[in-house]
Amino acid sequence: MAHAHVSTSRGLKGVLLLVFLFVDLGLLSCAARVEKVTRQKMQVNKHLKRLNKKPVKTIESPDGDKIDCVHISHQPAFDHPFLKDHKIQMRPNFHPEGLYDDNKMNTESKGKENTMHQLWHVNGMCPEDTIPIRRTKEDDVLRASSVKTYGKKHHKSVPVPRNVNIPKSADPDIDNESGHQHAIAYVEGDKYYGAKATMNVWEPKIQQSNEFSLSQIWILGGSFGQDLNSIEAGWQVSPDLYGDNNTRLFTYWTSDAYQATGCYNLLCSGFIQINSNIAMGASISPVSGFRNSQYDISILVWKDQKEGNWWMQFGNGYVLGYWPSFLFSYLADSASMIEWGGEVVNSEPDGHHTSTQMGSGRFPEEGFGKASYFRNIQVVDKENNLKTPKDLGTFTEQSNCYDVQTGSNSDWGHYFYYGGPGKNPNCP
Image (cartoon, rainbow, N blue to C red; front, top):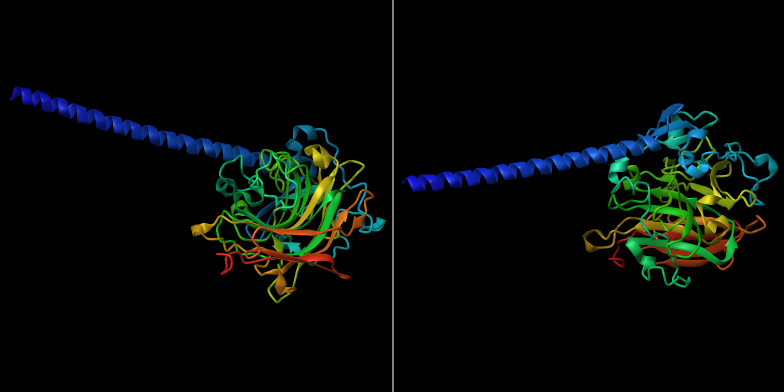
């Protein structure tokens, strides 16, 4: 009996040791999780501190955004080591001919023609010598897969028409990479120094929060491999980036095909803003309605060939700022391709095509008041003239899901309707 008692007590000790071991492992695992969360929180707070500069004034927007009026010399661009002693260029040396006369060369809103505004304007404006910056919230960063990827597009989200020469180093499946789909018009084969278009603004429905829908101009340089340079501007609905389904003005840039460089809006060092009226990433209001009023915006991006910087203008009166030429390799000289049109992310929820809409969510053949459009499409040539593009091509991966149709007339010049509903009986 004594032997049995000894083996039983040994057994109990073994069980207890295992219990303590599991408890210890559980505590270690719990501690590791806490440490990971704490480390992530510190990273996020550090990033927020870097992005959210000390404001002179803060304006609360009706949509929940906070717009910080930050002194022009304290904006995120000047965190870049190459911009430490940069002298801000307060106006471009040249505007493309045919757009401006001398008395219109200003950076404010005098003579502004479009009737749209940004929502935050109803509660105030930023003072002179400041720029409006949409404040980044903790939740905004946490929605991204990491602090590093916050404010960045995925690799290879530029549409590559099938007849365009792609280098062998590029991904052979690049035009349908990572579920991005497009309906665009484009020109290539020349040197371009800018592009302009007027596009109507909608609020497309997004099926999944990790998807987006946008309409934009792409200014492209280089091959479609790892060295692609791109400047982009337009409007977008992106729940992941902004936390809602509002239509917002945006810009983007990259000098290495969306790998390490560039970002949306002012979410990294790069774009230098000079305008005190327009906030990148802020909501645009009102938007177009089906068989109702149509609201459109004009966007112009052009190269100041004296300084080398790429400028952006919104509407006919807001010169927003510029991308310094040193950010780019190919675009330091000129662009080799211009694209206009729509892009969506198709994450194929439930194994089917997404029902995320592009543009108005209607196909191009429905026409004005129903379909979305780009009109008065122009490019800037070496002589700084706005010209009608030659040999305008079109491209879409799946025309049953999203399509594009071009046309021209005396009022709209070169134009196209584009977009679609995504998932439908012909696009399962």
